[in-house]
Length: 374
Image (cartoon, rainbow, N blue to C red; front, top):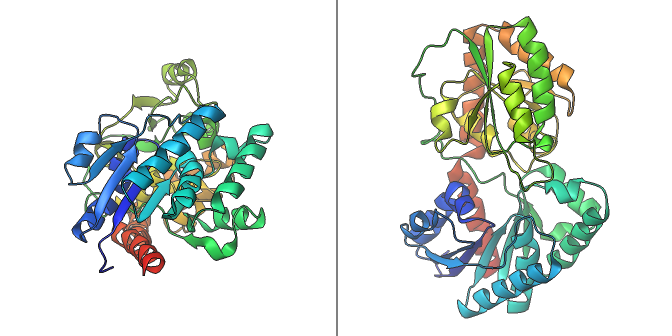
């Protein structure tokens, strides 16, 4: 890309931009482009602005609300930003920026790449909301220039449901992982117990119920283990686990709950195995972090998750919603030697370097931008 462009990056939180797209922001700035981060204001704005990127706040984005008037106001707000900043390209992520951003970009005659980072509760749950979301996607993606998917399953599903034509779709495997930042780090402490770690929002569709059930079964057989849980209890989400249930599981010794961590590496380096029994993902960030840190994994045979595993090589694959199989995989992992688990971790690290390194993902976005602006 020789031409200098004005590029917007739109997400549902500034935290999201900082955590998942800062490498892309820096690469675009280094290539001489003007970059605008567009999101609601939160504590991460100063860190984003410190890169030299301009932050543009949005007022009307309600992440979980279903008020159509507010959503239309958000769409109009994006349209005004795209026009006033005279953007050449917008990169949009997460459900509402994808839908209303596509409509705004079409109207403002701005090229767009919308990345479907996962299908979310409203898409997966049958009912009237599901029907409306599909209709919104179909309408919005007519205005989008390019629609990127993080895994083949989601891409195929959208094409089969005719939510967007195959000619507009492409595959970009996740947000990428900084393999210099996330790398194998020796343990700081010596634990007598084998530690299994779950990292993610505490949602039923992340497989939390199955994790609790499997943990209870597994710990009866192997009491010299710990199951650590790290992540937010996402109260506003209809799929959220309630605080009382988490407290109960901790009180009966099934899990150890760490709350939210600002630096997941410090906890992950102490773990022996990382577990994600999710029902469906875009491309789970925690699995990429685990691979990069050379941790063996246990995850489900579902969209997004299966992209991160070679069954029995870097971990074990289990069916979705199957606590029995999950407990069995945890036992299999327990019965391996330290050396065997270490070798699994090495295979995962190699996968992270070959397939998911942040630089490879950034290169893909540069290629897409080049194709649509040359």
